[in-house]
Amino acid sequence: MHNISIPSWLPDQGLIRLEPPDMSKTALLVIDMQVVFCEEGQALASRNSADIIPNINQLADAVRRGGGKVVFTRHAVTDDGARALPRWHLEDPRVRRMLYDPFLDPATLAIDVRMDVQSCDLVIEKFRFGAFGENSSDLGKQLQENGVDTLIVVGVATSGCCETTAREAMQLGYKVFFVTDANATALDELHNAALMNLGFLFADLRDTEEMLKLVS
Picture 1 (cartoon, helix red, strand yellow):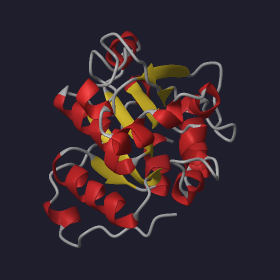
Picture 2 (spheres, one colour):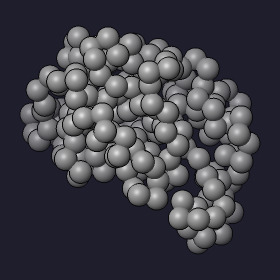
Picture 3 (tube, helix red, strand yellow):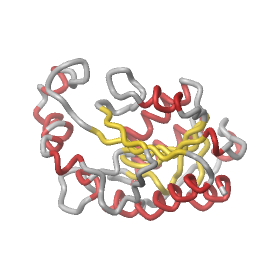
Picture 4 (cartoon, helix red, strand yellow):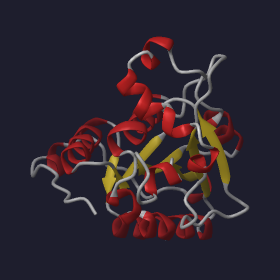
């Protein structure tokens, strides 16, 4: 689990503090908790990703019981069409090894078996770091159809897909909670930098215990 260090000034000076959510309009957005990021030995996995699984499962259960929606995203890649990554991005061999090659095996795209995915949940593929872009997924459409105006963001990676999606969501008008110990990335420094940026302007930072109280 990450060693979370939030600046002492942030709780007082951060701009975002939200009221407890209306659960009928709330979705837990579980970002990319896939084998490639969570299973030991995978190229992009870290211990931190596996450590947050129990917290996410607790939140998912509480959100369902409260009448909210649980949405899982799976990061995917394609070679062609509007959802293909930019060619210039893939021409760098380092980027290709990290962002493309590990996703060619369908088995690595699967959601980790330790995740509590229920038949009532939505599972959406996305093709960009942020989930809201037209060339990334139909997440926005799905949320609108379910009457969602509030998101609780969890998953991997804090400083990549999770932060990007949270920022996009706030800019689109969603109220965003970001759970400090239910998001993960490779390094504490990356995790804490993302939390500081999000908490100042984009999202209400809560830990799992606090979030469970808000949704219960």
